[in-house]
Amino acid sequence: MSASDFRQIAIRTESGKAERLFRAAVSAFCSLTRPSRREIAQLEDLTLPLFDSVPVESRRYVAAALSECEYAPAALVRRLCEEPVDVCAPLLVRSRALGDIDLIALIGRHGLPHARAIARRKDLNPTIAQLIKALEKPTLVRVRQPEPIADVAGADAEAAAAAPSAPKLPGSAAETARRRLRSMMLAGEATSVNPFVGLATYSKLRETALTGNAAFFQTALADALDIDFSTARSLTEHSSYVSLLAALRALDLSEDRAFLIVVAVYPREFPHPQAIRIFLDRYRLLHHEAALDKVRGWKAETLSRAVRGNTPVAANGDQAPDVDKASLGASLKAS
Image 1 (tube, rainbow, N blue to C red):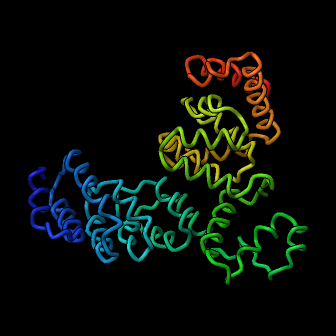
Image 2 (tube, rainbow, N blue to C red):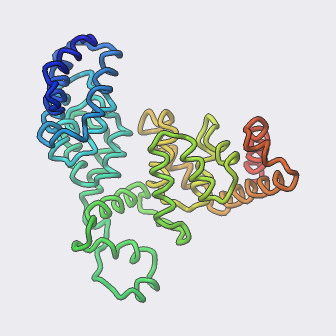
Image 3 (cartoon, helix red, strand yellow):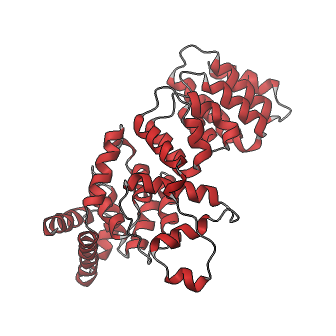
């Protein structure tokens, strides 16, 4: 499909009806047997800006059409999969544009409705199939009767986590799914949750990581760890996620939350389920106190640079990476 084809479609819809353009562009694309990368990019550039202005019925139509398309644009497919399951079910069941990591992330964000549609995929990865079975088991989450606030505050971590799952609370289904996901990934092990790391901190880290803008995430990480920006930047510029792993472990994030952040920052590190298993093993084996020691080392280095008057140099970024790498090496040896 050439640019002139798109222009002809646009000419026929000059009345401003984004819906007709949206449908026509996807229909024309699906008629191509082997679209080029340029044609795939053109479709994304044309449809994504129109996405929010088209009705649900058009999104449902496009999802069904692209589910049968072998070379569907990945960005458009992922955007459609964030819709309710009655819109995106065909993509969840059939689309080849969704990899294992995409499926796990969708289950983590949307819970059982998306998981049940994904379970119908042919040749579904056994690890994901086990995850969905775990989500279906009601025994993984204990539902207790509402308790007074004072009693909840004094209860153990399991009771505090189970309390929000009362059916009458808004969003309880999604929260229940996330807790079941965490239970499966822990494989029966108890989860240690840091009461000093609030939901706002995790939400800020997650949302900035998902923007794809490294500077936004690095700023949020610096705020969460109380370190300077250059140190936070160095943690995410390594070829491996080991340093970032230590930072998240120091914040005592649960495994599913840490994984979502790391996979957003290092998507290429998880090409297959075995990579996910390695991540979980590393995270479980990394002791919380050892991670805190590393953070203390980063803070000490930040203070040292400030005392020496080197803060402007770090902000400039010309010398900061070398200093940060030395600090990280010393911390790793110490642990």
